[in-house]
Amino acid sequence: MIYGYLNLRYEGSQCRLSEEQIARTKEFINNNIVTKSKQIISFIHESFGVKYTVSGIKAFLHKNGLLLVGDKSKSFESFQNAIRNFFQNINSFREELKTFIGLKMHVVRRT
Image 1: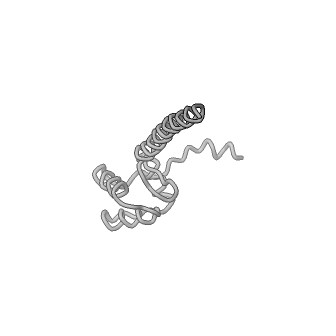
Image 2 (image 1 turned 30 degrees about the horizontal axis):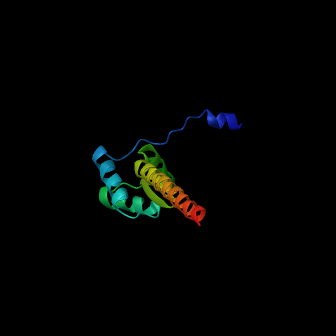
Image 3 (image 1 turned 90 degrees about the vertical axis):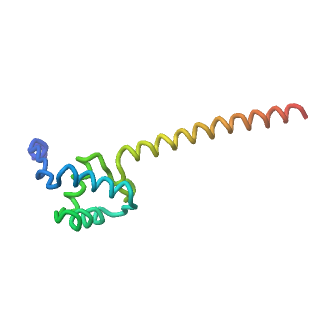
């Protein structure tokens, strides 16, 4: 029975926004602190007169390379950049720590 559901390949309805409206929505998401999908729904409805459900907006976000991360909506690129920056900072800290420990050990060996 579950196998039948997997084969439905339901993709939802066609996007009701133009490319320009999608671009404006992405700009809104990336330039504002968005904590709930309902904020995006309100923005789209007030700006373009198009209504979305919560599940519809989640599909819209996924289809357009956006995601909700910890209740904050950002583009996948900005999420990847945040992760990349985190690891660069960790690696930099690691190198500084190694240098510091090396200096400490050097000082300890002298005394």
